[in-house]
Length: 439
Ligand code: ASP
Image 1 (cartoon, rainbow, N blue to C red):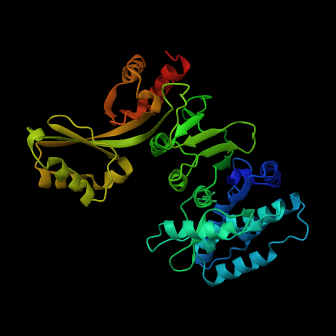
Image 2: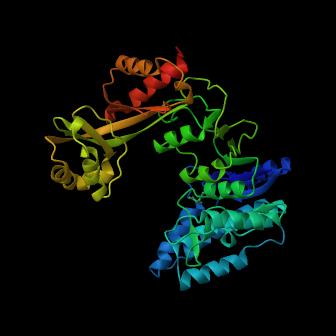
Image 3: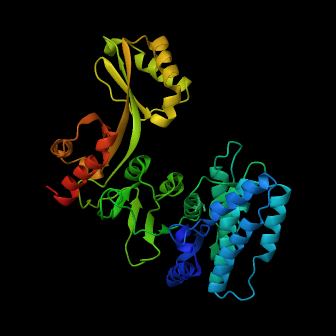
């Protein structure tokens, strides 16, 4: 049994809907379908979700939102007409939405209607049962998913239906009102449904044929990743490689259900498989490279730091007290470096520095900015000698100065810090040495 989720671009128009419909119909095991809201049809287009947020913002200020509502209606009508769905109308739903927006506008409610309405169309088009996630996906007081309760409710509800469409992105909040996940959250809904129904595969249909080894905006035409483990994906997406919502892996991962990222516009492509563990060799030593700019390094010096018990804790306390999460912490004998996000840190930097002085009494504290971090990730690195050597000689040849190195003991990734301005050159050099030349 497969659970299939279609992203916004896969359902942006009637033409895209037809492709998605053909994919579902082609394989009887595709029993549960999770649609997103209609996305962009072309580059400068606006996602329906964004239109809905705009409508809510106007309604909150008691301004006239009829123009935006009209645009939203048109988007759906275009799909309904293109699919030739006779006797189907969203008129009633739109009346309800308009009324609600006038009486008590609410951004979560507004945004959720994007997938809700698309789900209704999808159910009618496929002849599947429409199941509202409001009945079975629950959030707690903090707005976090109520995991157990949700899984049980979804399993029970869907056991009653052979084939269903469950709109993505929202559920029922603690206060009994509609609540959404963060943006891109339909991925999470799909994962919940796949996990709760013990699917064999969770197919996530999008507009790319899976993950790429590196960012195509920096590396032209990068190689594809065929198989990636959950842990590798975590490392890469943390560094900014984004195709899937961060939280979408947990419900399926627990049960060893693989995710297959597929391309609605090119269904014959195998896409990328995300798996718990695999014996499959990677095509290259590395699985992927990703990185981000704009980090700061806070360097702390103190003679005999290595023998002072509790020093690290005191330093970290200074960050914790200021509500800053740190990213990395490479250390030397008498030095410690804390790497943080510039945008999170910059406003609080002097407070943090004085807190470090107060709590840990270091000899000196220095701040360096404009640091970019690059993660070279690969399960294949574990058993390979010389991976780090190759990375550093490639960077040296490209005249990139390495400012920081951090390798986790899992040997799954190596983090390299370079100047912001060397970021692209460094990525290219690493990609070339592992993928192009494959020395
Ligand atoms: N439609 C929502 C968004 O644009 C959720 C999703 O597509 O997954 O973020």
